[in-house]
Amino acid sequence: MTKSTKLILFDLDGVLIDSEKNMKTAWQEVRKKFNIKVKFKNYRKYVGLPFYKVLKHLKIKDNFSEIKKTFDKSSIKNVNLIKLHPGAKSTILKLKKKCKLGLVTSKDNYRTKIILRKLNLNFKYIVALKPGMRGKPYPDQLKKAIRLFKFTKLNNVFYVGDTLIDQKFAKNAKVKYIHADYGFEKKRVKCNTKIKKLIEILEII
Image (cartoon, rainbow, N blue to C red; front, side, top):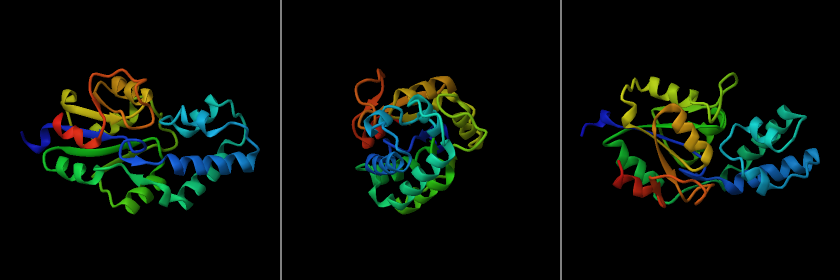
């Protein structure tokens, strides 16, 4: 099998990195600054959606831009709280030898690159969410990644995610979905292809 026959697109949070402590710390700063009563356990339910959609689900109606600035600033300040999931780096290196790999995330490009630099991860193409782009579960980001790789066989495109939103995301883009059952949503997602550790993807691809 040649390197060009399969394309694997990864989500970031929950799949490659454990960012829960970082998110929780950032959300605590948001709560304190804006006197928001919503606890992190409720925020956590919507991880994977674009940040503004998360706020809407939490019925937060004001100060969207300022809240995002505060959250992002805290996330960057506390980037050391983010850790790679076990085996992430070695698994990616092995996959690169036989597949094309990309990253598709609801994070913005700036924070995504800071995290990847800190953890020494590299991808040829990164499709982060930017203003004017429809986020998950709309398929826009996945379709853009597929175009960047000039990939035509959707049957050989895989998206690795960890939430129900990610599963819908892949379905809407008509690509195969692999569920990281160690991420933000465990057991709730019904999927034929699940991995309990990232290294297990080597047995699938």
